[in-house]
Length: 331
Image (cartoon, rainbow, N blue to C red; front, side, top):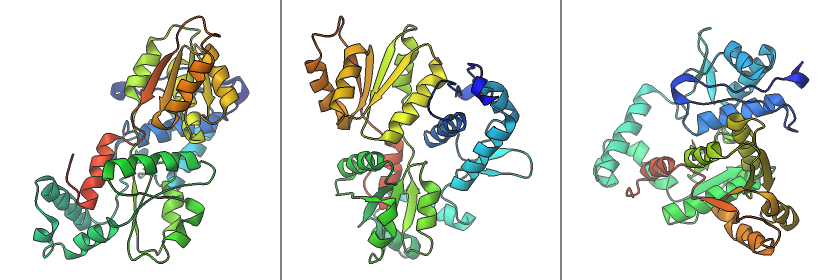
């Protein structure tokens, strides 16, 4: 039974992605595996066209029943992140889509922009594609569901800073109404919202671009160094990020360490976390609240708390890809 799942760590060969199901977690086992697979795909550990581990492998590694793993695969297929290929397995889907000709046009434009050619010089050859890029660059929108508005706010702030233009965050539930009067727009999101955004935009004159998220490799390396019994705090304005972080940390350390999470606005929980944590990982949006909580609890701690501030949520290479998509100079 899944209530008695053994504590198992697993590793997928050369890429070192590990999957772990924490039996005592409030997060259902299937949701833990789904979160870990979505993270691995969104962070680029599994790239477009690459095959995922089989349901038999994942069942053996995690202790889940194969039927449960297959249900997780079905969820991933529904989001559009993966696809089945003729009984040979499940593969990461190319998100850009379109025909071979459209893919070639995308690649050519990326190369020309990267080489420093202004867009007007190539407009005669690629009028439709370039017109779309120029129009879409006038309005970039970030979207996420109302159940996790924090992740959309983080993406909007990072893109506003990186692109030098105001990038608003529109709840997914309001997106259709927001774009109704727009001639063109580029809607960006992360891997967790792809299919819901795609369904919302059916028939609309806008584009959707999923952005890879930061892989947290440096932070995870530090967590691997911690001795058993350590307490790790994670602070973010996104409930989805907190859930993902808990699943990913447990996927590498099992129950050797305790993971504590808090929203920066939850002062009581945040101060309680600071009083016991050995290491705290925080995004840029919660750093000030963390430092206030540290100051408020300095007399409760026997030792200093180590704070790691994550500089990104969106992967830097995804920002560069977006700049190319919009025809902006590369940084």
